Amino acid sequence: MFKFTKTGVFVLSVIIIFCFIQIFIYKYPIETEINEEIMKTIGQPDIPVIETTEKCEIWQIEIPEISLIADISEGTTKEVLNKHVGHFEKTAKEEGNVGLAAHNRGYEVNYFKDLKLLKKGDEIIYKHNKFEKIYQVDKCRIIKDTEWEYLEQTEENILTLITCVENQPEYRRCIQAVEKEEEIY
Image (tube, rainbow, N blue to C red; front, top):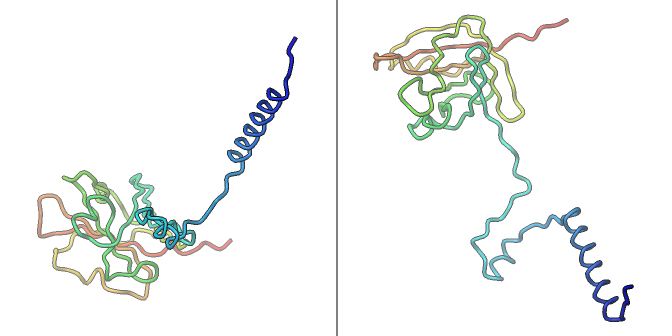
């Protein structure tokens, strides 16, 4: 049989209490805020402060007809278009004419590679944070690379997609979609 001494009972009690504390800490973690001033005081200024009020930004385009779902980023620089669909900075983000651009071939990311397959009536879903609109393709055309009027602000909600035309550097493919009317039942 086992014989317990006072020391053995104490050690066993400490181990059991320690195990319960560990289980409790694991099951109910304490969320603490990192105070930037405290971190500077204790000598760890390189630890980033976590903003608890930061909202999750969703900015996407979805075109079911060509199986496209892509994130959108501000700007149309090479760096932006190498990773995302780019937003023309001087166009609207929600109401009016939203202008977007992307590569269609020759790059690691070619989101608009199948844009030429779109036809009138195809749907495009555009999301910006909690804002979401469904557009229908209205016009598919080839324009000169100097025809910027297609990106001008409009009263009507339009989505304008622009990409290069294969082997024709002076031309662009321009798809314009209008906001889909809500069906009333």
